[in-house]
Image 1: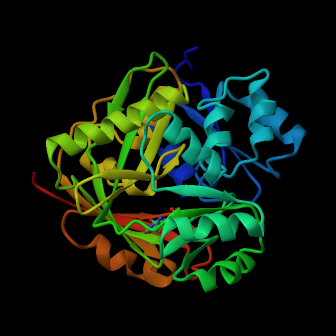
Image 2: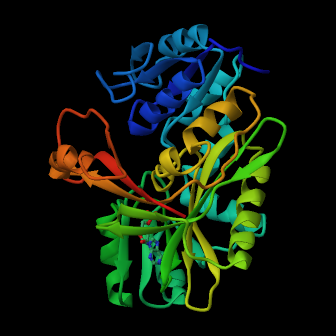
Length: 355
Ligand code: AMP
């Protein structure tokens, strides 16, 4: 189904990704309705309609469905059953399948390996015996991660010796976990793509990503890579979106190792922080292409117009926004969040330069 011009797009989630999706939807002539549990969320501030309610509330989901022609989501921890509830009678793009596959790190990595996409070695940990048996097989150091709920480095512990295995799991409250071999990566890269309703895929140039305290600090695009590496990354992304029968924008986070191999660390079934630079530097941004895909429009070109460096403004770094906005070729985005808590993504800026 194709959403007519002037139609309404529903978004589950009201953060900065929802806000930038709303901006893109408006430029394409759509209205937006946000469902988010928090009042005055970054997306709701600029949306046409907003419903403030927990994602689980069926009357709120019914209201969203009644108001919208198509519904999407902007973060991966939306309860799967809320999306399932909506998709019984309404158009939801992407569907609940990618959410289910990415909310659990064990399911996600198992899915990736099943479709021939390489990851680091991993094993499921649900009891102490698993940890004792599997932990040492991963080599040291290794990384213990909760199966669910982790983001920005939360829910993971680096383990340096056998003796640290049990305390690490206790630190994670002995929740179901996975143990992973530590990847001595040389760089972190990502590839973002958008898949349309007809199966066409538009790939963005890859970006190189630097993290600080497990939070993305900076993305540089295009990453300096060989054509061969871009082809390998595109092949992985293609397998993923086709394997999930995905519609919309999806990000694949990659580790590059010393021998030039690429391993997938995780996938995000949504627009992604490492693609914010596409707003200024590509012919069609990751946000615009997501809206185009879910509304059934043909995808826009992802052609690079400029080089770009995107830097996040975390916590009180947002106070630099006015000064940065005065710098040449610098585009500042303030997400409109009231409180600048430490570690909170408050905005970002993208500096562009000639190709
Ligand atoms: P994640 O929560 O899985 O996205 O991990 C957050 C960050 O932790 C990644 O961007 C990496 O910098 C680091 N990390 C996660 N898993 C590993 C691993 N297996 N080996 C080395 N570094 C890792």
